[in-house]
Image (cartoon, rainbow, N blue to C red; front, side, top):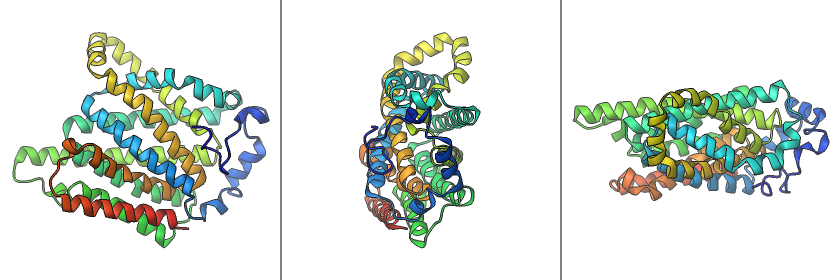
Amino acid sequence: MAKVAGVHGRPRRQRGARGGGRGRDCKRGRASGTSESPRDNRPMPPVALALVLAAALLHATWNIAAKKAGGGDAFVLMTSVMVGVIWAPVALGLGFGELVGWGAREWGFAIASAVVHLVYFRTLLRGYREADLTVVYPVARGSGPLVTVVAAIVLLGEPLTAGGALGALAVCTGVFVLAGGPRLWQGGGDAAARARMLAGLRWGALTGACIAAYSVLDGYAVKVVAMSPILLDWLSQLLRAPFLLPGQWRDRAGFLAAWRAQWKYALVGALLSPVAYVMVLYAVELAPLSHVAPAREVSMLFAALLGGRLLGESDRGLRLAGAALIAAGVWSLARAG
């Protein structure tokens, strides 16, 4: 995972080699934009595109597992603890030198990331319990990038070319078409189905807002504060546990029951989710966030292919059209400069 992470295509050296971090001069350079602006004006490098596509496949896989689990806070706690244990050797082995040099700023970003991701997982899983995956997932993945692109331009000062804008629009449009297009808004004549659809739209939109929030927050931490993506994601996962432990301790019987039913799905999330997200964070180091965030939504195509039974097999014409739009959008984002 570390060998593909070098910003210039080389294996990343341990960040503590310069006295516990990259050095203040390097961080000042990133903050001022002197090292990031030239790269952000270029098309998405092939390595960044490959990272995004691989991450999308892993993301779709663990989302299907989360949907099947039907879990809540107990599921999030299981996943967080498993991540903390499984990935500790990698995170500490590659990032301990940087970790000992962290100050209040870096720890503040790590804690903020943990809180935002906790809200994201709670919102996503609540949506999966109350509505269909075919509504929650596409609305979340389609609305999140649009907010992220705007925030990246406004807050991070990233440029967005006409090709990048068309690519983002094509990806997001393809996500909605792949999920059923206008049927998302119609919901049929059944009142119960209509209520379930509206719940999916509501929770999907809230999840999309969370996606935008953590994308911008973590993107800033990686690009400007120069925090290690692996270390940031690992600590963000681990720091969620203290927020969840009190409630689960009070309901130990419920947690044990959830453990017996959901631990296998939690393990899938613990193995795949960190790899997928760290790949995205490394892609953000190589390419503009406003290009990377929408390109991630090719995961909807993988979800449709891998989770046919969950997403349904009807309207193949719409699915093919949506897949074509997503592919065209990813190509446009990769070519945009």
